[in-house]
Structures are given as C-alpha cells and as structure tokens.
Image (cartoon, rainbow, N blue to C red):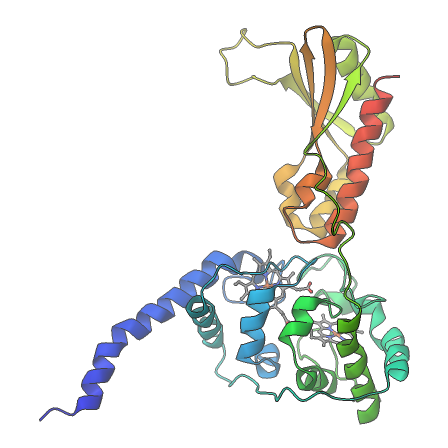
Length: 346
Ligand code: HEC
Ligand code: HEC
C-alpha cells in the first residue's frame, strides 16, 4: 500500500509552488517599484536587510501592507486578499534564511515626560520633532551621510497599528544594523529610558496627526484666470510673468500640434511649458512620482473673444499620492501658478 502522506504532499506541491509564484508576482507588481526587486530599497526602505527581518514579525508585515503609512509614500493595500498578503509575506521571507521575530502584544508602561525629553534629544533629528518621519524618500545619497535611509514615520496610524511595544523596544535596544538606526543601549540609555521612549511612541496613538487637507473638500482640478488681453499678448505676458517668478521658458506650441497635419493647427489654443529647476529637483527628491506631472504647463485658450489661462491644479494632483510633504510643496506650486497667471493680466 502506498503511504498516504507523500501522495498528499505531491498533490499539494503544485498549489504550494503556485502560491510562491504568486508571492513573487504580487511583490513585483505591488512593491518592487519602491522597495527594489529583491527588497534592496529605493523609494521605500530596504526590507531585505537581515537586521530588519530579524526584528520584524510576519504579522507586522501583514498589517503594514494592509494599513500602509497614511500621509507618507507607503500606500495601504486594502484590495489585496488575505491569501495574497500572505503570499507576499512568504516571498519576502525567502530573501533571508533567518526566522522572523515574534513578540507578545504586552504593553510597556513608562514615564511619558521623560520619554518626550529623550525623544527630542535623541530621535527628533531623524524622525521629526513630532515623530512625523524624515523628509524625502527611501535610500538616497543626497541626504547627510548619517541619514542615507529615510527615517520612517513613528507618529503614524499605520505604523502604530502594525508594531508592538516589544518590537519598538527590541529596535531601540539592538538598533537596525546596516541603517542609521543605532542601538540606544550602546549610546548609553538605561532600560528604563528605553521603556519611557517606547511608552512615548505608543502614546502618539492618543493624538493622531491629521493630514493638512483632511476633511476639506477636494481642490478644484483646474486653475483658471481670465485675461483682459488678446491671445498673443497674453502668451507673451505669461512667459514674462513666469520668468519674473523664477521659471524658465521651455517651449510653446498649439494644443493640437502633432495631432493635426502641420499648418492646420488652431492658433487660438496655445500651450506654454515652463520649469523651475530648483523646485523640480526638490520635488523629485520629495517624491519621484511627481515626474508624471512636470514640467509645468499652461494652456491659453481664446473662445468667443475671451482669453483664459489654465493650469492643472498641483494641489489636486497631489491628492493622488499619499505624501504630506508633497502636499505642502504642491500647495506652494498652486500659489505660484496663480501668481504667474495673475501677473500676466497686469
Ligand atoms: C540618525 C537617524 C536616526 C536617529 C537619531 C533615530 N532613528 Fe530610528 N530609524 C532611523 C532609520 C533610518 C530607520 C529605518 C530602519 C528600517 O528601515 O527599519 C529607523 C527606524 C526606527 C524604528 C522602526 C520603525 C519602522 O517603521 O521600521 C523605530 C521604532 C525607531 N527608529 C525609533 C527611534 C527612536 C525612538 C529614536 C530615538 C531614541 C530613533 N529612532 C533615533 C533613523 C534614526
Ligand atoms: C509608492 C512606494 C511604495 C510602495 C508601492 C510600497 N511601499 Fe512599503 N514603504 C514605502 C516607504 C516610503 C516606506 C517608509 C514609510 C515611512 O516613510 O514612514 C515604506 C515602509 C514599508 C514597511 C515598513 C518598513 C519598516 O522598516 O518597518 C513595510 C513592511 C513595507 N513598506 C512593505 C511594503 C510591501 C510589502 C509593499 C507591497 C505590497 C510596499 N511596501 C509597497 C514605499 C512604498
């Protein structure tokens, strides 16, 4: 008689390897663009580091995928099924031989006042004064050498819902080898200080950080300003206004250039491209995805004798992303667009 167990295993093998394939595929589709093909990091932190594996539970990964990091670049993957999330977590486990960590959900009591003082002294320089997280994204060499990996947000509903007090304590005690996050025991903090810091970080749950635009109606998708001049004068004014406001003129074309045969373009519909390279560099550093809506572009239309200048509202575009820092920058950009268009009417 053939033993039952091996045949059962054989029957399961295709299903198991399909799941493994799924994990690799789902990771490639959903995560690799930011965290790197094999977790080496990029816009997102280098998840494959053995030290991160050793300090991280599978449940932390599952919850991080589900909740994301609201207001940061890391999205929430609410639409992945539980099996898909498990497959991704299993795939991430295949990068490292070590076992993932396990922590009980025990709460660590501590002195919040002392924790707060220590936080300002030892953590705020990287994680932000309110624990909102470092500026910019992922792994980059454009930051100071001790901050090549962005410090993640701690005062963040997604992080707090994913982590446990014992994980935070382990991270503070051991540090995350290979990242700027060092051991604070080695820096001279006592166990009680570490506990006070853990309690302070946990207490962020009591004062959630709101996104600046939370609860406000969506900004209008298009900014538009009417011009008192004819189209030609308006275009010339707009170019000058852009230059006065530190943008460089790039090019001008009709809205339908390349769409209709040459010579048949409608000259009552013009596009003006301008760029502020300093701002562009700053924006790309904040979130490389802004490349999608740059350079800056104005459309100038003449309809029934009325000339209107228009631009997509950066504040509206910024809402597609999940990044408070980008929101602030787009808010500034929106003001600049309006200033340029208003200057062009003078
Ligand atoms: C020199 C910059 C720096 C300082 C100072 C610093 N950290 Fe970090 N911290 C980091 C970086 C970078 C990471 C990301 C490592 C990783 O990807 O796990 C990190 C990770 C963490 C994590 C894990 C969070 C997560 O999402 O993975 C916690 C918790 C944390 N730090 C708490 C603290 C506390 C509390 C202090 C002060 C006692 C502190 N850190 C000081 C840079 C710093
Ligand atoms: C658009 C970019 C982006 C995508 C896509 C993305 N992440 Fe992230 N992820 C980040 C960033 C940036 C952080 C750091 C969070 C912060 O700034 O606070 C992060 C943080 C994390 C963390 C916490 C890291 C730590 O050290 O504790 C985990 C775990 C994680 N991501 C897993 C994933 C997985 C798995 C996927 C795919 C299902 C994914 N991420 C997709 C950008 C991304």
